Length: 197
Image: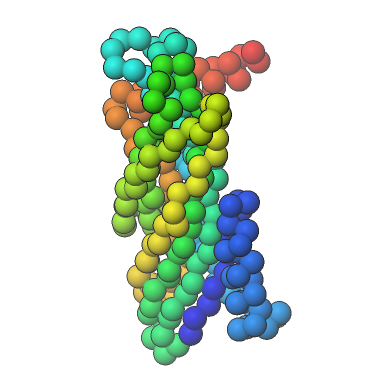
């Protein structure tokens, strides 16, 4: 038994989602809903990254690039044995990033490193993959949206398991210093929010 449906809520997966909907409708009929896909979440503390030039400077003029995970979506497909209920959940997804070139960026390039992790409902990591890409800012553009190649995930399923038993988390690969920088920004933002500022 193979069942396919959209996963995520993003614009970037419109074509994938449309194909999945057509597949689901023709295979199961309008009254048959395929099993759910895993929920996709972006980790708040790993959702953005400000890269600075080497050295102690952390002012605006020291910024190379600002990166942010802006979107993620795709489709999932079940391949399950009808008798045992054991099989595989295959996820095809795309991740988009918002990039802003900083004053210190001279070569008009940005390096992106990010991860996609599969967890159970208790957030225990079952599988984690890292991806890298290099992006160029064309012409005089200093801001762009970049979408990486599709990411393919394969999740083994035990009997009676569905996408509800798993979660997908996305984040940028950060150093400890970058992670602490993000955590401080989150604390500052929460402090302003609680004070009404």
